[in-house]
Length: 578
Image (tube, rainbow, N blue to C red):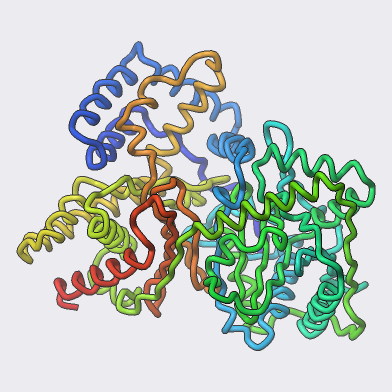
């Protein structure tokens, strides 16, 4: 079966009707905005959607934009690419997310085994032999798969994604103690080296790195904001030696970061989330991070969504455990090449400053994770409703118990049932969820709580179905704003986007997302606003796996939030007699 054979038959992402988006917006803003802000928003929304308002004009432009693509993409995809690639701040602070892998499944020697499995899976991708992914009984778009292993190159105004050619040899860029090496993943016949061969290669790299003088930490430039990254890469590229080394890193299909065994007092999850700037290359779409037998991946968000990466990691996991991969029988050592750099003194100083700044930011992250066994997939299904709706309600209740308020809540949902689909944003805080949360925390009678619980999960399920059908209001409003910037660049955005109510809706204090997968243990990302929480979760038979991050400004620490979440879950199960 060809990986892409169903893509051409998938429906195209619709443009939601303007009046339906207006109705949805009012429902989403009311629970998170005060009465005065909500009333002001509604007045501005009425003006925006009036026949002589900006809304119908921008809607017409968006429909024309969709038509001009002639089905070769979704209307969202080029707008999405522009938005992500024009981003100018630090990538790891805002554009990266991480997965801790279930390395115990592949022990011993989890790193070389999974590295070999990933190389075999990439060969399957190149040969278009990865089976199409299905979700809910339907095929999903695989269009991002062919270009998901890339390097993001800083450029003026808009970065570019560099993808190795299909005929290029498979190599990995390996970091150890800030030094970089290029490791061949295949032999002369194109077969992937065996895990034993790669294990020996990683050992050699560790020995060579230990014998070298302190590294300049060139990879740290990828931690800087994009203007600084562009300048530093440009300065380094003035020298042929550096150009050749940069090209070698950028042509590698992924990076492997060999951290020191054990993370000391730093939790492994937080080390994967940020880590040592000198031992990372955040412009790579995938970095496989190893500390002892612990494995994690750091992923760049512009070119591919996490659910696609989770699927590909799952393909590697499946082939590894089922012993379906064929490895090279060549016993010769894998080819290793140490990269050399010429770093001018001013650049060396700047790299040191970036590393120090990144380390300080790393130290500012509060991070914790928990496996709540009582909230397993099997248990939540006994509630006879959407398990994800239940988890979202529990997250809101836990936050309310910690902070005494219900903020705007963002949940990502995939729209890959459409060709070239990406994600839609569910606004999970609803009038119904707020009613349940307040009643639950006030100790309302059981009958009242049961009624409000059922109402809240039903509304969330309806919202999820609407968003999966491409009819959410989040991306639609983004599309309208992009049309205004495209066709009326000299004018200010319409007032609807500037209202306090809309700004509160878009200020994601509780940013949540779920990426389950057979290879995934925990999913994590940093908060998207200074006083918010980043909540990554996945529901398994073993329980609800949750990783939470925050900064000092949030006032809610991850450990306290997780404790409130577990306690809330147990109380809800008791309420339901489970």
